[in-house]
Length: 597
Image 1 (tube, rainbow, N blue to C red):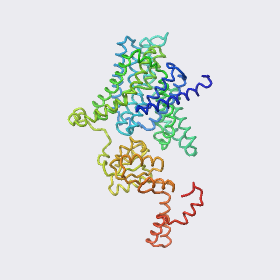
Image 2 (image 1 turned 45 degrees about the vertical axis):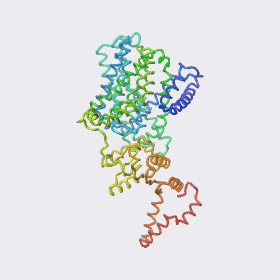
Image 3 (image 1 turned 45 degrees about the horizontal axis):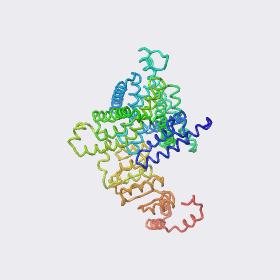
Image 4 (image 1 turned 90 degrees about the vertical axis):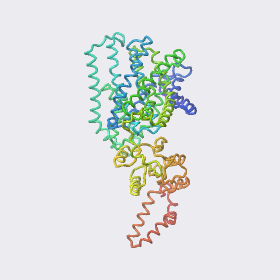
Protein backbone atom coordinates (compact mmCIF):
# COMPACT_ATOMS: atom_id res chain seq x y z
CA UNK A 1 0.00 0.00 0.00
CA UNK A 2 1.45 3.37 -1.03
CA UNK A 3 1.37 6.10 1.66
CA UNK A 4 -0.43 8.40 -0.78
CA UNK A 5 -3.35 5.97 -1.08
CA UNK A 6 -3.34 4.52 2.44
CA UNK A 7 -6.53 6.38 3.41
CA UNK A 8 -8.40 5.27 0.28
CA UNK A 9 -7.33 1.63 0.66
CA UNK A 10 -8.21 1.63 4.37
CA UNK A 11 -11.69 3.04 3.80
CA UNK A 12 -12.42 0.76 0.84
CA UNK A 13 -11.12 -2.32 2.65
CA UNK A 14 -12.99 -1.48 5.86
CA UNK A 15 -16.35 -0.87 4.16
CA UNK A 16 -15.99 -3.87 1.87
CA UNK A 17 -15.03 -6.30 4.64
CA UNK A 18 -17.63 -4.83 7.01
CA UNK A 19 -20.38 -5.32 4.43
CA UNK A 20 -19.34 -8.92 3.75
CA UNK A 21 -18.98 -10.01 7.37
CA UNK A 22 -21.97 -7.93 8.50
CA UNK A 23 -24.16 -9.57 5.86
CA UNK A 24 -23.01 -13.04 6.91
CA UNK A 25 -23.64 -12.20 10.58
CA UNK A 26 -27.18 -11.00 9.83
CA UNK A 27 -27.89 -14.20 7.88
CA UNK A 28 -26.76 -16.17 10.93
CA UNK A 29 -29.20 -14.16 13.08
CA UNK A 30 -26.35 -12.35 14.82
CA UNK A 31 -25.90 -8.57 15.27
CA UNK A 32 -24.09 -6.94 12.32
CA UNK A 33 -21.71 -5.44 14.90
CA UNK A 34 -20.18 -8.88 15.32
CA UNK A 35 -19.48 -8.97 11.60
CA UNK A 36 -17.84 -5.54 11.76
CA UNK A 37 -15.51 -6.67 14.54
CA UNK A 38 -14.62 -9.82 12.62
CA UNK A 39 -13.96 -7.67 9.55
CA UNK A 40 -11.47 -5.71 11.61
CA UNK A 41 -9.73 -8.88 12.71
CA UNK A 42 -9.51 -9.97 9.07
CA UNK A 43 -7.94 -6.63 8.12
CA UNK A 44 -5.67 -6.45 11.14
CA UNK A 45 -1.98 -7.27 11.45
CA UNK A 46 -2.73 -10.58 13.20
CA UNK A 47 -4.33 -12.19 10.14
CA UNK A 48 -2.89 -12.94 6.68
CA UNK A 49 -3.66 -10.96 3.56
CA UNK A 50 -4.46 -7.28 3.25
CA UNK A 51 -3.57 -5.22 6.33
CA UNK A 52 -5.27 -1.87 6.84
CA UNK A 53 -3.73 1.18 8.43
CA UNK A 54 -4.75 0.91 12.10
CA UNK A 55 -3.85 4.52 12.84
CA UNK A 56 -5.98 5.91 10.02
CA UNK A 57 -8.87 3.60 10.88
CA UNK A 58 -8.79 4.72 14.52
CA UNK A 59 -8.97 8.38 13.54
CA UNK A 60 -11.88 7.72 11.19
CA UNK A 61 -13.58 5.77 13.96
CA UNK A 62 -13.26 8.78 16.26
CA UNK A 63 -15.43 10.70 13.80
CA UNK A 64 -18.09 8.01 14.28
CA UNK A 65 -18.00 8.43 18.05
CA UNK A 66 -18.28 12.23 17.67
CA UNK A 67 -21.31 11.97 15.36
CA UNK A 68 -22.91 9.34 17.59
CA UNK A 69 -22.61 11.51 20.71
CA UNK A 70 -23.82 14.50 18.70
CA UNK A 71 -26.95 12.52 17.82
CA UNK A 72 -27.44 11.55 21.47
CA UNK A 73 -27.26 15.20 22.45
CA UNK A 74 -29.86 16.12 19.82
CA UNK A 75 -32.40 13.77 21.41
CA UNK A 76 -31.49 14.21 25.04
CA UNK A 77 -32.08 17.44 26.92
CA UNK A 78 -30.72 18.40 30.36
CA UNK A 79 -34.27 18.10 31.62
CA UNK A 80 -34.25 14.41 30.72
CA UNK A 81 -31.14 13.83 32.81
CA UNK A 82 -32.65 15.72 35.73
CA UNK A 83 -35.77 13.57 35.55
CA UNK A 84 -33.76 10.36 35.98
CA UNK A 85 -30.96 11.75 38.17
CA UNK A 86 -32.14 9.85 41.24
CA UNK A 87 -31.44 6.58 39.43
CA UNK A 88 -28.79 7.44 36.83
CA UNK A 89 -26.40 9.43 39.03
CA UNK A 90 -26.06 7.11 42.05
CA UNK A 91 -26.62 3.99 39.96
CA UNK A 92 -23.94 4.67 37.36
CA UNK A 93 -21.45 5.81 40.01
CA UNK A 94 -21.91 2.76 42.23
CA UNK A 95 -21.94 0.39 39.25
CA UNK A 96 -18.66 1.78 37.93
CA UNK A 97 -17.01 1.65 41.35
CA UNK A 98 -18.11 -1.97 41.78
CA UNK A 99 -16.85 -2.99 38.34
CA UNK A 100 -13.55 -1.17 38.91
CA UNK A 101 -13.12 -2.98 42.21
CA UNK A 102 -13.85 -6.39 40.67
CA UNK A 103 -11.50 -5.74 37.75
CA UNK A 104 -8.77 -4.48 40.09
CA UNK A 105 -9.11 -7.58 42.25
CA UNK A 106 -8.97 -9.92 39.24
CA UNK A 107 -5.90 -8.25 37.72
CA UNK A 108 -4.14 -8.16 41.11
CA UNK A 109 -4.72 -11.90 41.48
CA UNK A 110 -2.77 -12.33 38.24
CA UNK A 111 0.16 -10.46 39.73
CA UNK A 112 -0.34 -7.19 37.84
CA UNK A 113 0.80 -3.87 39.29
CA UNK A 114 -1.63 -1.51 41.04
CA UNK A 115 -1.52 0.92 38.11
CA UNK A 116 -2.23 -1.83 35.53
CA UNK A 117 -5.03 -3.25 37.70
CA UNK A 118 -6.63 0.19 38.00
CA UNK A 119 -6.62 0.75 34.24
CA UNK A 120 -7.94 -2.77 33.69
CA UNK A 121 -10.80 -2.33 36.16
CA UNK A 122 -11.72 1.07 34.76
CA UNK A 123 -11.80 -0.34 31.22
CA UNK A 124 -14.31 -3.00 32.28
CA UNK A 125 -16.63 -0.58 34.08
CA UNK A 126 -18.14 1.40 31.19
CA UNK A 127 -20.60 0.08 28.61
CA UNK A 128 -20.45 0.89 24.92
CA UNK A 129 -22.60 3.89 24.03
CA UNK A 130 -22.80 2.65 20.43
CA UNK A 131 -24.14 -0.77 21.43
CA UNK A 132 -26.59 0.49 24.06
CA UNK A 133 -28.09 3.08 21.73
CA UNK A 134 -28.43 0.52 18.92
CA UNK A 135 -30.22 -1.84 21.31
CA UNK A 136 -32.58 0.91 22.51
CA UNK A 137 -33.35 2.06 18.96
CA UNK A 138 -33.95 -1.46 17.65
CA UNK A 139 -36.39 -2.16 20.49
CA UNK A 140 -38.14 1.21 20.28
CA UNK A 141 -37.12 2.21 23.80
CA UNK A 142 -35.32 5.49 23.10
CA UNK A 143 -38.24 7.66 24.22
CA UNK A 144 -39.51 5.44 27.03
CA UNK A 145 -38.61 6.08 30.65
CA UNK A 146 -36.35 3.02 30.38
CA UNK A 147 -34.53 4.61 27.46
CA UNK A 148 -34.14 7.88 29.32
CA UNK A 149 -32.72 6.10 32.36
CA UNK A 150 -30.31 4.16 30.15
CA UNK A 151 -29.15 7.26 28.27
CA UNK A 152 -28.85 9.20 31.51
CA UNK A 153 -26.81 6.33 32.94
CA UNK A 154 -24.57 6.42 29.87
CA UNK A 155 -24.11 10.18 30.14
CA UNK A 156 -23.03 9.87 33.77
CA UNK A 157 -20.63 7.07 32.83
CA UNK A 158 -19.22 9.10 29.95
CA UNK A 159 -18.72 12.15 32.17
CA UNK A 160 -16.92 10.07 34.78
CA UNK A 161 -14.73 8.42 32.14
CA UNK A 162 -13.94 11.79 30.59
CA UNK A 163 -12.80 12.95 34.01
CA UNK A 164 -10.81 9.74 34.42
CA UNK A 165 -9.11 10.17 31.05
CA UNK A 166 -7.89 13.61 32.08
CA UNK A 167 -6.86 12.59 35.59
CA UNK A 168 -5.44 9.15 34.81
CA UNK A 169 -1.90 10.31 33.99
CA UNK A 170 -1.79 12.30 37.22
CA UNK A 171 -3.19 9.43 39.29
CA UNK A 172 -0.78 6.93 37.78
CA UNK A 173 2.07 9.33 38.42
CA UNK A 174 0.97 9.60 42.04
CA UNK A 175 1.11 5.79 42.21
CA UNK A 176 4.68 5.92 40.92
CA UNK A 177 3.78 4.53 37.51
CA UNK A 178 3.52 6.00 34.04
CA UNK A 179 5.98 7.05 31.45
CA UNK A 180 9.64 6.41 32.02
CA UNK A 181 11.48 9.10 33.91
CA UNK A 182 8.33 10.69 35.35
CA UNK A 183 8.47 11.44 39.06
CA UNK A 184 5.53 10.58 41.33
CA UNK A 185 3.02 13.41 41.79
CA UNK A 186 2.41 14.73 45.28
CA UNK A 187 -0.98 15.19 46.91
CA UNK A 188 -1.01 18.95 46.34
CA UNK A 189 -0.16 18.55 42.66
CA UNK A 190 -2.83 15.87 42.28
CA UNK A 191 -5.52 18.05 43.88
CA UNK A 192 -4.46 20.98 41.72
CA UNK A 193 -4.73 18.85 38.58
CA UNK A 194 -8.18 17.61 39.58
CA UNK A 195 -9.40 21.14 40.30
CA UNK A 196 -8.01 22.45 37.02
CA UNK A 197 -9.72 19.68 35.08
CA UNK A 198 -13.08 20.37 36.71
CA UNK A 199 -12.73 24.10 36.06
CA UNK A 200 -12.01 23.48 32.35
CA UNK A 201 -14.99 21.15 32.00
CA UNK A 202 -17.37 23.55 33.74
CA UNK A 203 -16.01 26.47 31.69
CA UNK A 204 -16.69 24.64 28.44
CA UNK A 205 -20.25 23.71 29.44
CA UNK A 206 -20.99 27.25 30.62
CA UNK A 207 -19.57 28.73 27.41
CA UNK A 208 -21.71 26.45 25.26
CA UNK A 209 -24.75 27.17 27.42
CA UNK A 210 -24.36 30.94 27.21
CA UNK A 211 -22.80 31.55 23.80
CA UNK A 212 -23.27 28.33 21.84
CA UNK A 213 -26.94 28.10 22.79
CA UNK A 214 -27.58 31.29 20.82
CA UNK A 215 -24.85 31.24 18.18
CA UNK A 216 -25.26 27.68 16.86
CA UNK A 217 -29.06 27.75 16.31
CA UNK A 218 -28.71 31.23 14.78
CA UNK A 219 -26.11 29.92 12.33
CA UNK A 220 -28.17 26.88 11.33
CA UNK A 221 -31.30 29.00 10.90
CA UNK A 222 -29.57 31.37 8.47
CA UNK A 223 -28.05 28.44 6.55
CA UNK A 224 -31.47 26.77 6.31
CA UNK A 225 -32.96 29.97 4.87
CA UNK A 226 -30.48 29.76 2.00
CA UNK A 227 -32.44 26.77 0.71
CA UNK A 228 -29.32 24.68 0.08
CA UNK A 229 -29.52 21.21 1.60
CA UNK A 230 -25.82 20.62 0.98
CA UNK A 231 -24.84 23.75 2.91
CA UNK A 232 -27.07 22.77 5.81
CA UNK A 233 -25.54 19.29 5.99
CA UNK A 234 -22.06 20.81 5.89
CA UNK A 235 -23.04 23.24 8.64
CA UNK A 236 -24.23 20.38 10.87
CA UNK A 237 -21.01 18.42 10.32
CA UNK A 238 -18.90 21.54 10.83
CA UNK A 239 -20.63 22.31 14.12
CA UNK A 240 -20.46 18.76 15.51
CA UNK A 241 -16.84 18.12 14.52
CA UNK A 242 -15.71 21.70 15.13
CA UNK A 243 -17.11 21.92 18.65
CA UNK A 244 -15.70 18.47 19.49
CA UNK A 245 -12.20 19.35 18.28
CA UNK A 246 -12.35 22.81 19.82
CA UNK A 247 -13.44 21.43 23.17
CA UNK A 248 -10.57 18.93 23.18
CA UNK A 249 -8.01 21.53 22.08
CA UNK A 250 -9.03 24.47 24.26
CA UNK A 251 -10.55 22.82 27.32
CA UNK A 252 -8.97 19.38 27.41
CA UNK A 253 -12.28 17.49 27.41
CA UNK A 254 -12.93 14.50 25.19
CA UNK A 255 -14.22 14.68 21.62
CA UNK A 256 -17.28 12.71 22.74
CA UNK A 257 -18.25 15.17 25.47
CA UNK A 258 -17.75 18.15 23.15
CA UNK A 259 -19.99 16.62 20.48
CA UNK A 260 -22.62 15.67 23.06
CA UNK A 261 -22.82 19.22 24.40
CA UNK A 262 -23.06 20.56 20.83
CA UNK A 263 -26.02 18.26 20.21
CA UNK A 264 -27.73 19.38 23.43
CA UNK A 265 -27.34 23.02 22.34
CA UNK A 266 -28.93 22.36 18.93
CA UNK A 267 -31.71 20.22 20.48
CA UNK A 268 -33.42 23.41 21.64
CA UNK A 269 -33.56 24.72 18.07
CA UNK A 270 -36.43 24.22 15.63
CA UNK A 271 -33.93 22.55 13.29
CA UNK A 272 -32.88 19.75 15.64
CA UNK A 273 -34.81 17.06 13.77
CA UNK A 274 -33.40 18.09 10.40
CA UNK A 275 -29.88 18.26 11.86
CA UNK A 276 -30.22 14.73 13.22
CA UNK A 277 -31.52 13.39 9.92
CA UNK A 278 -28.62 14.93 7.99
CA UNK A 279 -25.99 13.61 10.41
CA UNK A 280 -27.43 10.08 10.62
CA UNK A 281 -25.99 8.59 7.39
CA UNK A 282 -22.49 9.83 8.22
CA UNK A 283 -22.91 8.62 11.77
CA UNK A 284 -23.79 5.10 10.67
CA UNK A 285 -20.92 4.91 8.20
CA UNK A 286 -18.25 6.06 10.65
CA UNK A 287 -19.68 3.90 13.43
CA UNK A 288 -18.94 0.91 11.20
CA UNK A 289 -15.34 2.12 10.83
CA UNK A 290 -15.13 2.37 14.60
CA UNK A 291 -15.91 -1.31 15.12
CA UNK A 292 -13.62 -2.32 12.27
CA UNK A 293 -10.76 -0.37 13.84
CA UNK A 294 -11.37 -2.09 17.17
CA UNK A 295 -11.21 -5.50 15.52
CA UNK A 296 -7.91 -4.57 13.87
CA UNK A 297 -6.31 -4.15 17.30
CA UNK A 298 -7.45 -7.54 18.58
CA UNK A 299 -5.06 -10.48 18.56
CA UNK A 300 -7.44 -13.47 18.31
CA UNK A 301 -4.66 -15.74 19.54
CA UNK A 302 -5.26 -14.53 23.10
CA UNK A 303 -8.52 -16.51 23.17
CA UNK A 304 -6.55 -19.69 22.55
CA UNK A 305 -3.53 -18.97 24.72
CA UNK A 306 -5.36 -17.34 27.64
CA UNK A 307 -8.91 -18.79 27.66
CA UNK A 308 -9.27 -18.69 31.45
CA UNK A 309 -8.30 -15.02 31.62
CA UNK A 310 -10.67 -14.16 28.77
CA UNK A 311 -13.58 -15.98 30.43
CA UNK A 312 -12.77 -14.35 33.77
CA UNK A 313 -12.74 -10.91 32.15
CA UNK A 314 -16.09 -11.59 30.45
CA UNK A 315 -17.52 -12.74 33.79
CA UNK A 316 -16.38 -9.52 35.47
CA UNK A 317 -18.10 -7.45 32.76
CA UNK A 318 -21.36 -9.37 33.11
CA UNK A 319 -21.23 -9.36 36.90
CA UNK A 320 -19.96 -5.81 37.37
CA UNK A 321 -22.21 -4.24 34.74
CA UNK A 322 -25.35 -6.32 34.14
CA UNK A 323 -25.95 -7.82 37.58
CA UNK A 324 -24.87 -4.78 39.58
CA UNK A 325 -26.82 -2.35 37.35
CA UNK A 326 -29.97 -4.49 37.63
CA UNK A 327 -29.72 -4.84 41.41
CA UNK A 328 -29.00 -1.15 41.90
CA UNK A 329 -32.00 -0.10 39.79
CA UNK A 330 -34.30 -2.40 41.73
CA UNK A 331 -32.93 -1.03 45.02
CA UNK A 332 -33.50 2.48 43.64
CA UNK A 333 -37.18 1.54 43.17
CA UNK A 334 -37.24 0.98 39.42
CA UNK A 335 -39.58 -1.73 38.02
CA UNK A 336 -37.96 -5.15 37.80
CA UNK A 337 -38.70 -5.80 34.14
CA UNK A 338 -37.25 -2.45 33.11
CA UNK A 339 -34.24 -3.02 35.38
CA UNK A 340 -33.53 -6.34 33.70
CA UNK A 341 -33.77 -4.81 30.22
CA UNK A 342 -31.49 -1.90 31.04
CA UNK A 343 -29.06 -4.15 32.91
CA UNK A 344 -28.85 -6.42 29.89
CA UNK A 345 -28.03 -3.50 27.61
CA UNK A 346 -25.06 -2.65 29.87
CA UNK A 347 -23.68 -6.19 29.69
CA UNK A 348 -20.82 -5.31 27.33
CA UNK A 349 -17.92 -2.89 26.96
CA UNK A 350 -16.89 -0.77 23.99
CA UNK A 351 -15.37 2.45 22.77
CA UNK A 352 -14.29 4.07 26.05
CA UNK A 353 -12.81 0.77 27.17
CA UNK A 354 -10.66 0.74 24.04
CA UNK A 355 -9.60 4.35 24.63
CA UNK A 356 -8.69 3.64 28.25
CA UNK A 357 -6.76 0.51 27.27
CA UNK A 358 -4.89 2.45 24.60
CA UNK A 359 -3.97 5.15 27.11
CA UNK A 360 -2.77 2.51 29.54
CA UNK A 361 -0.48 1.05 26.88
CA UNK A 362 0.82 4.48 25.84
CA UNK A 363 1.59 5.37 29.47
CA UNK A 364 3.51 2.13 29.89
CA UNK A 365 1.35 0.65 32.66
CA UNK A 366 -0.70 -1.85 30.64
CA UNK A 367 0.82 -4.59 28.50
CA UNK A 368 -0.31 -5.61 25.03
CA UNK A 369 -1.70 -8.76 26.62
CA UNK A 370 -3.88 -6.66 28.91
CA UNK A 371 -5.23 -4.68 25.98
CA UNK A 372 -5.92 -7.87 24.03
CA UNK A 373 -7.86 -9.26 27.00
CA UNK A 374 -10.01 -6.13 27.10
CA UNK A 375 -10.64 -6.26 23.35
CA UNK A 376 -11.42 -9.98 23.46
CA UNK A 377 -13.87 -9.41 26.31
CA UNK A 378 -15.51 -6.63 24.30
CA UNK A 379 -15.95 -8.93 21.29
CA UNK A 380 -17.33 -11.76 23.42
CA UNK A 381 -19.74 -9.57 25.40
CA UNK A 382 -21.07 -7.81 22.29
CA UNK A 383 -21.67 -11.24 20.70
CA UNK A 384 -23.36 -12.51 23.88
CA UNK A 385 -25.41 -9.36 24.48
CA UNK A 386 -28.44 -10.30 22.28
CA UNK A 387 -28.59 -13.71 23.96
CA UNK A 388 -28.29 -12.06 27.36
CA UNK A 389 -31.09 -9.69 26.44
CA UNK A 390 -33.31 -12.54 25.27
CA UNK A 391 -32.57 -14.57 28.40
CA UNK A 392 -33.40 -11.71 30.77
CA UNK A 393 -36.55 -10.97 28.75
CA UNK A 394 -37.71 -14.54 29.35
CA UNK A 395 -36.81 -14.23 33.03
CA UNK A 396 -38.83 -11.02 33.26
CA UNK A 397 -41.82 -12.70 31.58
CA UNK A 398 -41.59 -15.67 33.94
CA UNK A 399 -41.42 -13.46 37.03
CA UNK A 400 -44.39 -11.42 35.78
CA UNK A 401 -46.47 -14.61 35.86
CA UNK A 402 -45.85 -14.87 39.61
CA UNK A 403 -47.33 -11.69 41.13
CA UNK A 404 -46.20 -12.42 44.67
CA UNK A 405 -42.60 -12.93 43.60
CA UNK A 406 -42.78 -9.84 41.39
CA UNK A 407 -44.13 -7.63 44.19
CA UNK A 408 -41.50 -8.89 46.59
CA UNK A 409 -38.63 -8.31 44.16
CA UNK A 410 -39.94 -4.93 43.02
CA UNK A 411 -40.63 -3.80 46.58
CA UNK A 412 -44.38 -3.18 46.59
CA UNK A 413 -44.11 0.44 47.73
CA UNK A 414 -41.80 1.31 44.88
CA UNK A 415 -43.22 3.98 42.56
CA UNK A 416 -43.72 3.01 38.94
CA UNK A 417 -41.69 5.43 36.83
CA UNK A 418 -43.16 4.50 33.45
CA UNK A 419 -45.06 7.22 31.57
CA UNK A 420 -47.73 4.76 30.50
CA UNK A 421 -50.70 6.42 32.24
CA UNK A 422 -51.95 7.88 28.97
CA UNK A 423 -51.80 4.45 27.31
CA UNK A 424 -53.56 2.38 29.96
CA UNK A 425 -57.00 2.64 28.30
CA UNK A 426 -55.71 2.66 24.73
CA UNK A 427 -55.11 -0.96 23.83
CA UNK A 428 -58.16 -2.08 21.79
CA UNK A 429 -60.37 -0.37 19.18
CA UNK A 430 -58.33 2.81 19.04
CA UNK A 431 -56.91 4.90 16.19
CA UNK A 432 -53.24 5.34 15.28
CA UNK A 433 -52.34 8.79 13.97
CA UNK A 434 -48.99 9.14 12.17
CA UNK A 435 -47.81 12.76 12.19
CA UNK A 436 -49.18 15.58 14.33
CA UNK A 437 -48.59 18.63 12.17
CA UNK A 438 -51.32 20.93 10.88
CA UNK A 439 -53.21 18.06 9.24
CA UNK A 440 -52.70 15.55 12.01
CA UNK A 441 -53.64 18.07 14.70
CA UNK A 442 -57.01 18.72 13.04
CA UNK A 443 -57.71 14.99 12.81
CA UNK A 444 -56.68 14.54 16.43
CA UNK A 445 -59.05 17.31 17.53
CA UNK A 446 -61.91 15.62 15.64
CA UNK A 447 -61.17 12.27 17.29
CA UNK A 448 -60.99 13.89 20.74
CA UNK A 449 -64.32 15.68 20.27
CA UNK A 450 -65.92 12.37 19.33
CA UNK A 451 -64.30 10.64 22.29
CA UNK A 452 -62.32 8.21 20.12
CA UNK A 453 -59.09 7.08 21.83
CA UNK A 454 -55.99 7.41 19.68
CA UNK A 455 -52.20 7.16 19.82
CA UNK A 456 -50.13 9.68 17.86
CA UNK A 457 -46.60 9.05 16.60
CA UNK A 458 -44.52 12.16 15.92
CA UNK A 459 -40.81 12.76 15.17
CA UNK A 460 -40.58 16.23 16.71
CA UNK A 461 -39.72 15.88 20.39
CA UNK A 462 -41.12 19.27 21.39
CA UNK A 463 -44.46 18.48 19.75
CA UNK A 464 -44.60 15.17 21.63
CA UNK A 465 -43.88 16.87 24.97
CA UNK A 466 -46.63 19.42 24.31
CA UNK A 467 -49.09 16.65 23.33
CA UNK A 468 -48.42 14.74 26.53
CA UNK A 469 -48.90 17.90 28.55
CA UNK A 470 -52.46 18.28 27.24
CA UNK A 471 -53.20 14.59 27.75
CA UNK A 472 -52.64 13.15 24.28
CA UNK A 473 -51.06 9.70 24.16
CA UNK A 474 -47.99 10.45 22.05
CA UNK A 475 -44.97 8.38 21.02
CA UNK A 476 -41.75 10.03 19.95
CA UNK A 477 -39.90 8.41 17.05
CA UNK A 478 -39.98 7.19 13.46
CA UNK A 479 -43.08 5.09 12.80
CA UNK A 480 -41.23 3.12 10.12
CA UNK A 481 -39.24 1.43 12.89
CA UNK A 482 -41.07 -1.71 14.12
CA UNK A 483 -40.07 -1.06 17.73
CA UNK A 484 -41.74 2.37 17.67
CA UNK A 485 -44.91 1.21 15.94
CA UNK A 486 -45.44 -1.71 18.33
CA UNK A 487 -45.98 0.72 21.23
CA UNK A 488 -49.14 1.94 19.46
CA UNK A 489 -50.71 -1.57 19.55
CA UNK A 490 -51.38 -1.90 15.78
CA UNK A 491 -52.70 -5.44 16.17
CA UNK A 492 -55.80 -4.25 18.05
CA UNK A 493 -56.31 -0.82 16.46
CA UNK A 494 -59.42 0.01 14.46
CA UNK A 495 -58.10 2.85 12.30
CA UNK A 496 -54.75 3.98 10.88
CA UNK A 497 -54.45 7.61 9.74
CA UNK A 498 -51.20 8.61 8.02
CA UNK A 499 -51.05 12.40 8.02
CA UNK A 500 -47.31 12.55 7.33
CA UNK A 501 -46.47 13.64 3.75
CA UNK A 502 -43.84 11.04 2.76
CA UNK A 503 -45.44 8.38 0.48
CA UNK A 504 -42.51 5.95 0.75
CA UNK A 505 -42.71 5.91 4.54
CA UNK A 506 -46.49 5.71 4.35
CA UNK A 507 -46.32 2.56 2.23
CA UNK A 508 -43.79 1.02 4.61
CA UNK A 509 -46.02 1.80 7.61
CA UNK A 510 -49.04 0.31 5.86
CA UNK A 511 -47.16 -2.94 5.19
CA UNK A 512 -46.02 -3.23 8.82
CA UNK A 513 -49.45 -2.46 10.27
CA UNK A 514 -51.21 -4.89 7.94
CA UNK A 515 -48.80 -7.61 8.94
CA UNK A 516 -50.21 -7.20 12.46
CA UNK A 517 -53.79 -6.28 11.53
CA UNK A 518 -54.91 -7.18 7.96
CA UNK A 519 -58.45 -5.75 8.37
CA UNK A 520 -57.56 -2.33 9.77
CA UNK A 521 -59.20 0.72 8.16
CA UNK A 522 -56.59 3.05 6.59
CA UNK A 523 -56.73 6.73 5.61
CA UNK A 524 -53.65 8.22 3.96
CA UNK A 525 -52.55 11.64 2.73
CA UNK A 526 -51.29 12.00 -0.87
CA UNK A 527 -49.88 14.75 -3.08
CA UNK A 528 -50.46 13.51 -6.64
CA UNK A 529 -52.69 11.37 -8.81
CA UNK A 530 -49.94 8.77 -9.07
CA UNK A 531 -49.63 8.47 -5.29
CA UNK A 532 -53.39 8.28 -4.91
CA UNK A 533 -53.59 5.51 -7.51
CA UNK A 534 -50.79 3.61 -5.79
CA UNK A 535 -52.50 3.70 -2.41
CA UNK A 536 -55.85 2.74 -3.93
CA UNK A 537 -54.16 -0.30 -5.49
CA UNK A 538 -52.86 -1.16 -2.03
CA UNK A 539 -56.47 -1.26 -0.89
CA UNK A 540 -56.48 1.64 1.55
CA UNK A 541 -59.92 2.83 2.52
CA UNK A 542 -59.35 6.47 1.60
CA UNK A 543 -56.46 8.29 -0.10
CA UNK A 544 -56.93 12.05 0.01
CA UNK A 545 -54.94 14.66 -1.89
CA UNK A 546 -54.54 17.83 0.16
CA UNK A 547 -54.50 20.27 -2.75
CA UNK A 548 -57.58 18.71 -4.32
CA UNK A 549 -59.57 18.84 -1.09
CA UNK A 550 -58.58 22.51 -0.79
CA UNK A 551 -59.77 23.08 -4.36
CA UNK A 552 -63.13 21.41 -3.60
CA UNK A 553 -63.63 23.67 -0.60
CA UNK A 554 -62.75 26.80 -2.51
CA UNK A 555 -64.99 25.73 -5.42
CA UNK A 556 -67.93 25.24 -3.06
CA UNK A 557 -67.43 28.64 -1.46
CA UNK A 558 -67.06 30.29 -4.88
CA UNK A 559 -70.34 28.80 -6.09
CA UNK A 560 -72.16 29.85 -2.93
CA UNK A 561 -70.79 33.40 -3.19
CA UNK A 562 -72.16 33.59 -6.76
CA UNK A 563 -75.67 32.77 -5.56
CA UNK A 564 -75.74 29.02 -6.21
CA UNK A 565 -77.92 27.32 -3.61
CA UNK A 566 -76.38 24.94 -1.11
CA UNK A 567 -77.77 21.68 -2.56
CA UNK A 568 -76.73 22.57 -6.11
CA UNK A 569 -73.21 23.59 -4.98
CA UNK A 570 -72.90 20.33 -3.06
CA UNK A 571 -73.97 18.41 -6.12
CA UNK A 572 -71.37 20.06 -8.33
CA UNK A 573 -68.58 19.40 -5.82
CA UNK A 574 -69.70 15.80 -5.38
CA UNK A 575 -69.67 15.43 -9.15
CA UNK A 576 -66.08 16.66 -9.17
CA UNK A 577 -65.24 14.16 -6.43
CA UNK A 578 -66.86 11.40 -8.41
CA UNK A 579 -64.65 11.96 -11.41
CA UNK A 580 -66.85 14.34 -13.46
CA UNK A 581 -63.91 16.65 -14.15
CA UNK A 582 -63.75 16.66 -17.96
CA UNK A 583 -62.06 20.02 -18.34
CA UNK A 584 -59.66 19.26 -15.49
CA UNK A 585 -58.66 15.90 -16.99
CA UNK A 586 -58.22 17.34 -20.49
CA UNK A 587 -56.09 20.18 -19.14
CA UNK A 588 -53.99 17.83 -17.01
CA UNK A 589 -53.27 15.64 -20.03
CA UNK A 590 -51.72 18.65 -21.77
CA UNK A 591 -49.49 19.55 -18.81
CA UNK A 592 -46.00 18.18 -17.99
CA UNK A 593 -46.09 15.23 -15.60
CA UNK A 594 -44.53 17.11 -12.69
CA UNK A 595 -47.18 19.89 -12.92
CA UNK A 596 -50.24 17.66 -13.03
CA UNK A 597 -52.52 17.88 -10.03
